[in-house]
Length: 117
Image (tube, rainbow, N blue to C red; front, side, top):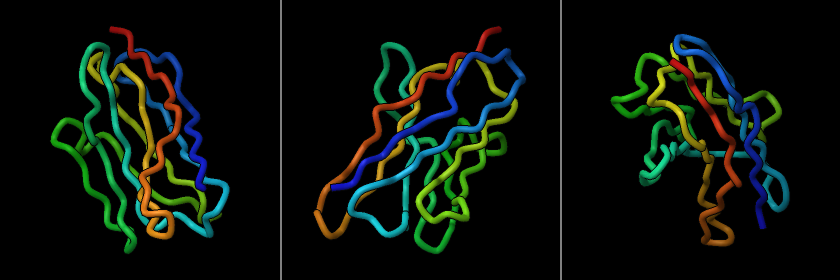
């Protein structure tokens, strides 16, 4: 099993920045690929950023140019740097990865981000 935990959420004013982290533990040697999702209040989860095994980053149109996803040097942490935050970025942010050994998707419990206008 793999356990994911997000951290770094909080309350920030519009235009501010936050850095989220997603740390994996359990039966995993290192994070290869990982996705970040955002769930706004009352809405479905949407993928906002991904990082692949070869460290290619992909972003949704809503965050491109403002968010940056990258892997940490410890191999088990992925970060999401969020700049120029907008009120519509408010919501819970989740990280998720697919584990080939278990053939399962794992999700963290999420971290709350609130952007005030």
